[in-house]
Length: 139
Image (tube, rainbow, N blue to C red; front, side, top):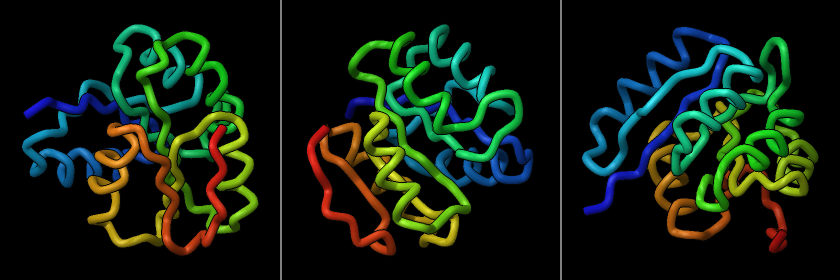
């Protein structure tokens, strides 16, 4: 079994801790770092080159939308970005996808969808929360 490395980027400590605890129960997922703002997410992505960056949109110093292309510039093509956001409007998901995100989950989604989405985008698929009803387009 290949291990999927994940960087969590969210400015709320309780969210990071909850995600870390949830994903620690998944034998094929390993948390390699945590970022508390967008600039730190970019720097840690460059340093750690995780398989997945689990990225919040609303963060200090650099928001998630602005961080997406910067993360892509400083990592390999194998690093995928999964947005986890309070914004449930499909326009945010479409915009994130247009910038290069491989997936988008609303924080209102079922918690167990996070591991499913991570595995899905790690295998090369796009994953958008069922609540977004997007017509997924290849980038």
